[in-house]
Image (tube, rainbow, N blue to C red; front, side, top):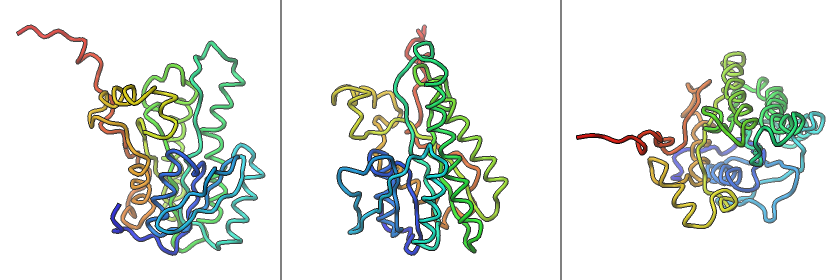
Length: 258
């Protein structure tokens, strides 16, 4: 992305920012000039770098509120500020509802909804005391906008995350802006686990109006915009980054008589 947005002097946290979509977001923020700290349960195999700079990393289990609060307190001591929080960490295995008990499904909700809530509340304590406030970006999913068989708990959590962001935006305005990126399918190093080989990835991509899966860098570009002063009047929004969504199945199933 051309350096038309300058985030130099700002500090950003990207949860789960060490691989896949999260790494793409981290690189975009680094390229824009932000100092970026990532957190996840496990360290990356290699540091996330971009623009000649390297993101920091702190091991944190985002499902542990005390650990999350300690992480943000230390971040404030080390950097003196927090301008952007990207709640990217999350995910789910494919599992039909009847194939697991409520406890296992609840863990998916905990990771994808409760953990972002915990992180955002801790970040808010820093942001609300700053003259420039801050920006929180939730990484949502189209799974939260439509039926999600096999990932039902995940879809429910993402729907809740979007609603949570809208409420936060109202409660915390004007100091802190809160928005959601609603993602479709993104091509990452793990795409083969979901879609198969290159032919499978290409076939899935053809179901998207733009004809392909998103690249992590494109999600990062959207985050840079929402983190910047160029989005100063954007809060409580759900930005669709899904390539046009999904072609309605009835269009392929319908028979037209001329």
